[in-house]
Image (cartoon, rainbow, N blue to C red; front, top):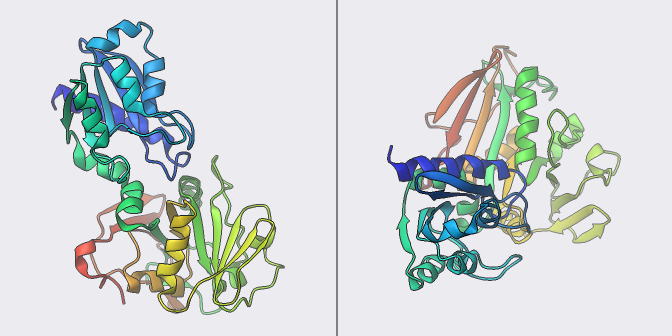
Length: 350
């Protein structure tokens, strides 16, 4: 691994600290190196707050060293004044020697503009270092920018014989305590969590973060005919909750009813979520809702727990017709991770 790759890996590692707090912005880390020593580093900590470069520069005790330093940053520095000033202005002000970048910013307001601003001021640029790792880290952000929709994660637990629930629709607790704790960690990392009407009726979930420390995701319910009454826990007004339906638009405190046309319902819903600035959603079921996303090819990642238990009969779990990208043991459960390949024409389920 080259020196540039080593320092970029550090930038990527610290960028991850922003997961769950910076969306819809990307996770960004910055490392400042002078004569092969790290003299400052920082990461984007909160949406609307200072960018990674600002924290890194502020952490440099002797600012005169910046003139001869190399800046490692996993995403192209911004070149426009948004919620914060342009980072390129700060870097050119300090006349840094060199900037090494993993990925160009796909946002049309930035893409290539930050690099051009730095080149204008005779700052050397090197890009594409750990490019694939940078794309993976910010896969949510790249999906938002390139597909103009949230990054969609499907999640479910199933038995070893392929059932997601019993015939009476009782699905509690197929997975282990350890697996359920991980699910709460995942909830804290994403912007929103989505279920269908049936899950609300049969499970009455709270859809919040309990076994982990972090932000509660926005709750989303698909109830096209508005058949759910307000007795369910998701309507407790404690967390912003959006009910997507065919019937009405209405706001009642923290409860939002959003009408979407029947034609291309899922696409319309995802477009609306994107416009609301929600960069990622985790879809937790049930089987019909999950299958609708799979059949439409509107998913990016699937996380499937397989318990050693068997139901022998019940409601069949969704099927993804492809090999998992990875698998691991979580206590007695197997966790399979799938990725959607956009070149497969969406035919990844049945």
